[in-house]
Image 1 (cartoon, one colour):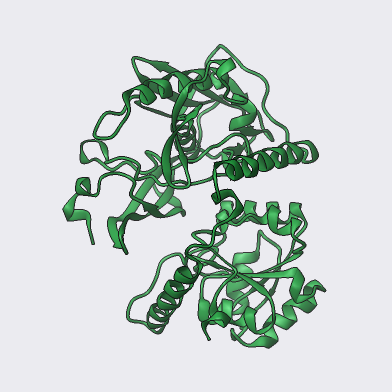
Image 2 (tube, rainbow, N blue to C red):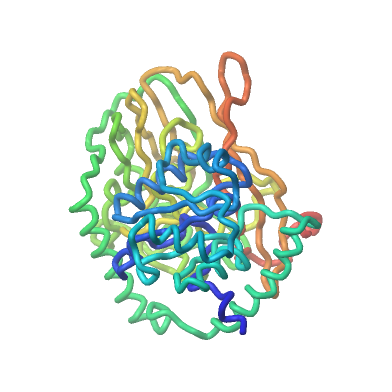
Length: 438
């Protein structure tokens, strides 16, 4: 009975959807909800969402925005995206979905619907024979009609997860299958790098640019219960090697920085050692482990600049307790894995930026420098940070915003949600501050 409400895939964010794999499977069109799926309720499209649509189109997808909202609201969201759309869709009414198929000139078997509501987006797609992806909604309302509907959907989602529990993907069958899947993804990334015309930075300068846009430093060695000191020391060696590869790198206008294009493959022959890597939610030893620390530091630099993030992968940012109980947004959580899980950003400005990264006294130091002063500064603000128990597991929950502040007036000229955080806690639950559990 409940099968008509079950999605074909469930993800935490649209940024987790493997669009390239879906295209390879024969899908050619996407029907997308807007509010709480792509952006918070009634919000404009963020630069990250605009880039996502550019990537989707580069792969070859057609898109239709399908929303119960008014034409005016959709056009405001759509002004820099330029997608076809259907307003006042009255989901889960079949007519709107069939109209979307007609606009794209596609069959139901060639189309996927992406939305945050089971009783509207997913059910409507099911009624038309269209595959569906359920996205964990951005924010929620409590006590309103949508809040009551969410409680019903939470129960349906629980049944869906219970049904799927025990079904393993090929990569989860055994370590050999995991390695086969990993090599397949590495080959696919090499192929995409060949066919997509991306301009990567190649030039370095030993002379530092005059303006420090943002700088950050953090310790390389963690200590505490269950932390292997050998793996920590190896991590420090790995980060020093990778930092040296990018120290002084110049990112000119129009160029895209790629973590793995810059660092290269992490092998024993190149001096890399076994460090901690996160595999299927578990920390394990792996050659080159610990470089997520460096990628996360780069992400912090970029978020405090006008540079545009074009690829970002998230793992849990609750790998260890907050040092001295002080929470720092994006102190962890950026994932990289050679070479298909990359961290990339593009310089869409009219001046050149420089990355400076080095290690000293078991500390990683990183700076983003520029040729000239910027008219704005950037600030990360975290709201509603707490921990929540779901079943037998705890999760860190928060929303992290980026404020763009005019230097001359001090006014916040833009506020954008950069992460709707829902990260599994991977450290001892007894170390979670009791006052932060809700």
